[in-house]
Picture 1 (tube, rainbow, N blue to C red):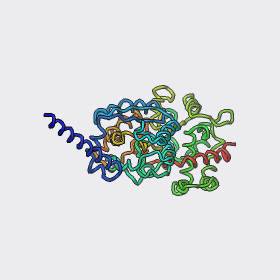
Picture 2: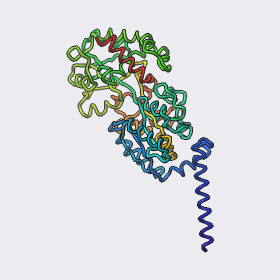
Picture 3: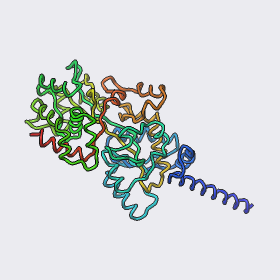
Picture 4: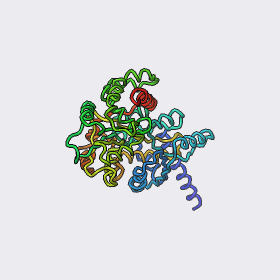
Length: 414
């Protein structure tokens, strides 16, 4: 009897060792998940995934802690542990672990934005080929899109996977206005006829103001001419040369704007308040879904409605990445895979849940599945995803954004 128990123990150990080796082969790229996906599921299920998030957005955190948490628990019995931490603190932890050769790190998955991916990648802190191992990434995303293959123009090269978007929108009160400007030309005509009815916050102080001026510059200069700004090492002089027509437009717009004692408003909250007070016909926001809560909380009037210019507005993207020494890489892969599932992409799109725009390309899924996005619960005052998808500009590198803000301050903010 003892011999039989010993024999079965040896067989079990050998089996576990083989499974471990097979999983290791997949993670090092020797095999592909479409052939061995079941093994990844087996390895990643019934584990804990430690997700670190740099964003403090309350709706995002609430959704991750509820809908996403429950989905991972239901599908794979994965326990999702979410921690909010600054990028500096995250990189400090990872650098210390790598320095001390800690193979099983405490961080399994991170959510990154605004060139945080570039920072971590350049420090050598990220695990490669994650994108190639996530089935839903291969099946449902258009890899030719700039924000799918790069973050602000910086190549992902399989180290990062996009999963959500946000896009700047403008807002007006349809109870006060019957029509709204759909281009920079229309906007100029409107403010000339209605001085002090429009403004935007100082882009050096408020990100929404920065998104607005970049939207204007994109339209005035043309997307094809803006491509040079994604080149590595582009100089401030070159940026100034390219965007000068846009700065000239903003300078011409300046005299017609509502200001606070001749100064640009410092925050979008101040612009929102002026809109609520009836001093402005328009306001704006980085988040297409913000209007839902803004009306509910009486920040916006009941007649508020979002719109975008016909040529588009600036869009930004959220990414997943896995640290180089993550202890639960297969669990992280399953978590990314599930975030790109139809259920999660549709659910997080609804403003009442989170209001994060999907990254799924509806041309790569069935018509019935694509219909789910059209049927998602959106109030009539919000711009729908299909319109936003057709009217968007890719966000510029952070270094170029800073240059543009400085140039705006020099040429426009006098």
